[in-house]
Amino acid sequence: MGMQDQTNSGAKVITSLNLKGGVGKTHLCWLIAGVCQEQRKRCLVLDLDKQGNISSTLLGPTASDLTGCEQFFNPAIDANINSLIAKSELSHIDCVPGSFKLEQYNNTSPGDWEGTGLEQSLVDPLNAVRKFYDYILIDCPADISLITYAALCASDFLMIPLETAQWGALGTQHVLTAFNHVRTSNRPSLKLLGFVASRFKRGRKYQKQYLSELREHFGRDAFETVIPDLAPFEQSVNDRIPIVLHSPSSHAATIARDFFREVEKRSTQR
Ligand SMILES: Nc1ncnc2c1ncn2[C@@H]1O[C@H](COP(=O)(O)OP(=O)(O)OP(=O)(O)O)[C@@H](O)[C@H]1O
Ligand SMILES: [Mg+2]
Image (tube, rainbow, N blue to C red; front, side, top):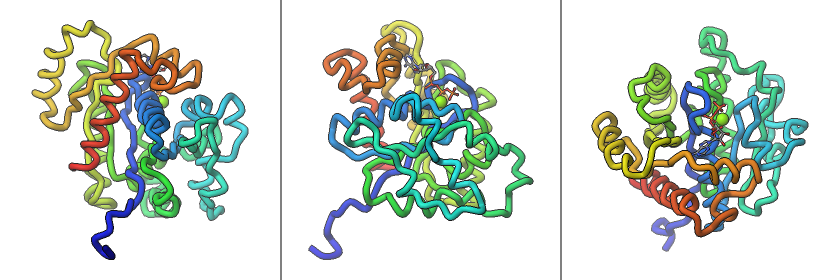
C-alpha cells in the first residue's frame, strides 16, 4: 500500500462566519458537532466568540472560567493547544472554550495587527491536532477582527449562514471581501463551503421557491439543505443535547443529518 494508503490526512477545518448577529453561526456548528457525535466522528470546536455560546452548550455554565482560545492570541505565550482542549460530556466532541477573555483581541482595525503575524496564531495549533479529528469547527463572532482573520487563515472552508432573503447584505459582502483577501495573501487553499439558509421562517411549501432564488444569487455555492427555524432546534441548545440524540426520529434530526451529509459532500468535492 505505502503511498497509496488512504489514511486520514486529518480534520477538515470549517469556519462559520457572518457579520450579522443571530443568523445561526453557532447553531450550524452545533448541528455538525451533534451529527459527528451520532456517527462517531471526532470533532473539535474552537469558540472564538467572547459570548462563549457554544462553550457553555458543550461544557456547561462554568466554561467561562476556563482558559481557552484567548491564549492563542497572546504574543507573550506559546500556547499549547493540547492543554486548552476541554472534553465535553459527549464522547466525540472536544472544545477549546471562548469567553469574555477574548474581548481584548477583538481588534477590528487591521492596521493594529497587520504585519505582526498574529493573524497566523491558529495555524500551528490546529496543525498539531488535525490528525486527531475528522472535523474542526471554528465558531466566530459577528465581526471582522484579528480573531476572525485568524480563523480564516487556519481554515480549509468558510461556511456563511444566512437568514433568509439577505443575499447581497452588506455583512455578507464584507465576509466575502475578507475571504478573498485571506485567499490571495495568506491561504490560497481556503475554499467557500457555501451559503446556508440557517433560519428559514416560512412554511415548507415556500422552500422550493426560496431555494431557486438562493441558487439564482449564489449558484452552486448555495447549500441545497435549508435549515428551518424550528422550536426543537432551540430546545436542543437549551437542553445541551444534540438534536439527533435529543429527538432522533424527528423532522429536525433528519434535517441535521441532511445538512451534515451535504457538508461532507461539499468538503470532499471542493
Ligand atoms: N434553525 C433554528 N431554529 C430555531 N432556533 C435557532 C435556529 N438557528 C438558531 N437558532 C437560535 O437562534 C439564536 C441565534 O442563533 P445563533 O446563536 O446560532 O446565531 P449566531 O449567528 O451565532 O449569533 P451571534 O452573532 O450572537 O453569535 C440561538 O438562540 C439559537 O439557538
Ligand atoms: Mg454565535
